[in-house]
Length: 64
Image (tube, rainbow, N blue to C red; front, side, top):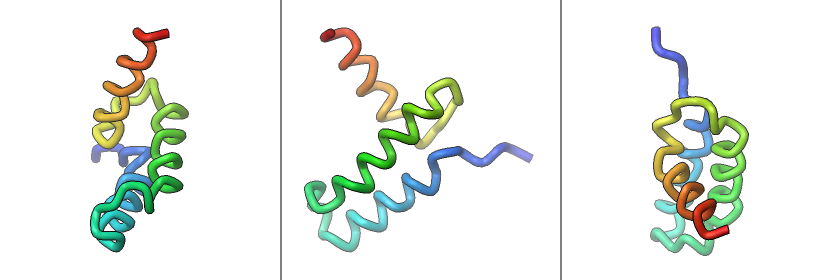
């Protein structure tokens, strides 16, 4: 049985928040921040939920 994605709970919370707020991202900053934190915490895990955030980190790292 495949292991559950460690950040799936946060990913679902983002979708729920965006739907409830007519996809206005600024109203969901707290749940998006929680997702980023989860992805940073589990960066060594192959997480499907964090794949978009992982690309974001690589872009940010190259700038610094």
